Length: 134
Ligand code: HEM
Ligand code: HEM
Image (tube, rainbow, N blue to C red; front, side, top):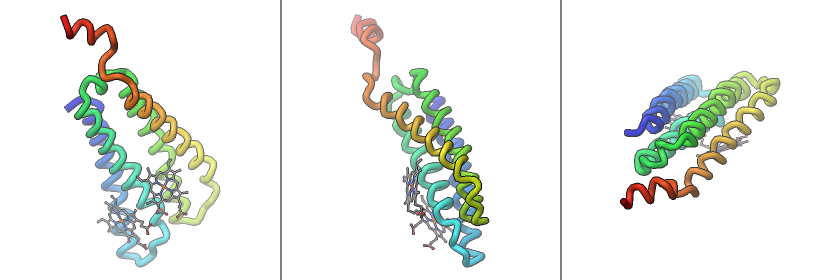
């Protein structure tokens, strides 16, 4: 598996464990107030990261591009900035974290923008395609 896929799965599964922990805490306490944090740890942190990792595993030529690692770095940084304050907001009702949440979600969006460029870019550069054809 390409390194970038391994990295997406390694960080993704940590977010899944945290998301599940929040789910179990909600189930045990009967207080479901933190469900938006639970949903985004699982869906942004695990599901979307795993889809990115799967995409690069299916497109190894794209996984070798520098842009793939920039995508991983930006997206994961965004999650680390966004998700803990999201949990704090809904677990404690403290809205003071909103600006950090905003910054985190913009970094996440920037990571997705880089992925969009990766998806629409050709798998091989014109030069390496010519070399491969020789
Ligand atoms: C052991 C694992 C899990 C537990 C104990 C758990 C528990 C919960 C609980 C208690 C709620 C709040 C329900 C409500 O009040 O409406 C919830 C909501 C939710 N969970 Fe989980 N969950 C688990 C795993 C997952 C996973 C793996 C995902 C996604 C991949 C997920 C996605 C969601 C979503 C999207 C919601 C919000 C649903 C809505 O909008 O009402 N959960 N979960
Ligand atoms: C930076 C990206 C994202 C931002 C800023 C964002 C923001 C939000 C907001 C503000 C809500 C309403 C929360 C509430 O008051 O209940 C919401 C709900 C929801 N979002 Fe996202 N979202 C993002 C990405 C995603 C992604 C990628 C998925 C799925 C793969 C997703 C799935 C959901 C679901 C299922 C709900 C309904 C459950 C809930 O309220 O938590 N979101 N999102």
